[in-house]
Length: 262
Image 1 (cartoon, rainbow, N blue to C red):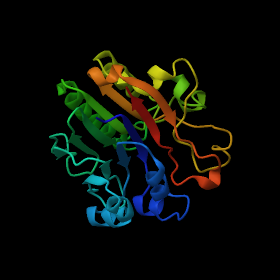
Image 2: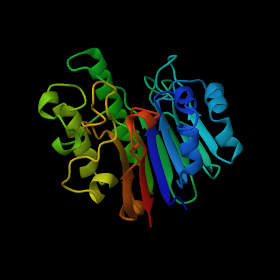
Image 3: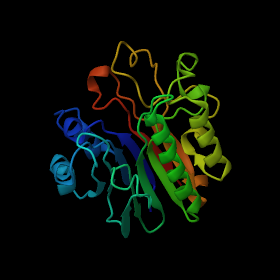
């Protein structure tokens, strides 16, 4: 049974695993998660497997969708059990080669890892972001059994999900259309498990800029979600953002978000 699921944008798997003594490999060795969804590996499958070799030698299985463009995207699922089956892409000719979506079937749940790219308001990049969200939404609505889709959505849903929301109302990541998209999937039956377990509080944030003192001041965004559908959604009992105690101990600009299920 998948009792604990984590998600984290690793901001380059080779960089994240290369931080000796305080990096991703040490986190993987310590975590109790059964499944870890990762985003922005920014590496080929061979490079990703080489970077994660110590973890794979310890028994983790990797399902990976490598980037379509060098240095961008790349998503994966690390699991303690070998998946029964796995699929890359959403059935979209535009996006299936981009390395932004992968899903894997386990005995009790299907888990997906997704990376939604950063857009830019009123540009073709933002139009592409909306098309990708539409493709994800169509796929999500087709799922009928227990399903958890995890990842970096690059969208803060409400004012509680971004510290400086007033300064970002016209910026990608907090645009009305993006926020309405999340409204739509929640209305269709998905549960934002972290928000359900932490209602009406700021954050908990999962991404902080490397600039200035954003991390020290907890001036972050909550953009890493685990959205669940089916019976598993009601089994979520604890959700934490595994924020490093100091800026120096970070191994990504995102922190792992971990949900435990009954």
